[in-house]
Image (cartoon, rainbow, N blue to C red; front, side, top):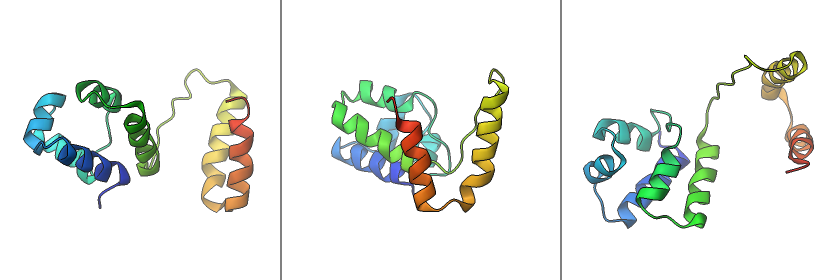
Length: 118
């Protein structure tokens, strides 16, 4: 199952007229790892998009599109609560518990609250 990010990455690779081996070499990762990122079986590593943007001299628009595609492709997240305040921990855990049962309207409400001040 290819993710939205995997499709965007493949499209970029084709637009740059590169095969997977050439992109993997340029990105300094193995061919199998790039393939796994593209097919969505491996998570996109931290800093990958920034490195991709630098190596391919991508426009801000293209980089932003990749970031959006990545956001839409995330199936799980890992949040470190080691330095969180107790109230922050409670919020994170409660959101994780409630999220699967929340309606679209409830999600929009919470999201609008969290976006305030951005």
